Length: 319
Image: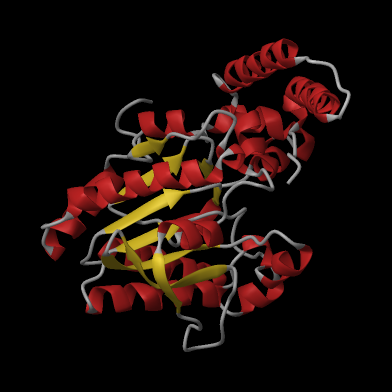
């Protein structure tokens, strides 16, 4: 599969293209021996990639978080969990494919999982509404959380959305109320609840399934009350100033760790999770397992108190 390069990765793209040309030349029957040159170019490419990703600004992290090859929730289901059984519908209106959820096994333990799915192909993106959930998606999430509490199962959620669906149908069916109910149910859960922001965690669309005991974040994910473009449209009356807005909003994992919006950052492979998805998901699985183990043995009352205190602590430090 060919690599999709972001705008700021142009120097890497040019180097990799040169490497591919030389490899093709070396592989030909009468091709010259260029092993040393290839080794030097590969080393140069690796170093450039490390240097480039060492200190990404907020806008570049936003671009990485939106990379088309970044692992989606469906990839986590396939690679991190076993025996996944999807549960559909909200028992009120219908099913929403933007939020996928159900029962699964995680490192041997039964769990309830849910997350936004954006889709990769045009067909899948339309099916999943680009990860923008309708009210029935959040009501399905509440139903899943009710099920988890009834059977004493931990909950793991994976927000990855530009925001909840803002259309007329969503408003008619109570979008704001559905998100609020999802947030309320997360806060009141009597079982361990861990969230991992895997790409974009934007607006109430994310928090509706993220009111957890532990909120983790992939290294190059972003998390905020609004997208940089939306913020720029409001503050500057110009969506083209999204880069400036991203810097001002403090949407990256290091910034959010300082203010206790999140609890931990999951390291990604050099160059982002899209360059080595399996390794990125393996790192995520370790972090999720560690977070669940920290919550093991806590009573429902203790879990609710811990959750309340972690949200009250947001912003008290690091401002």
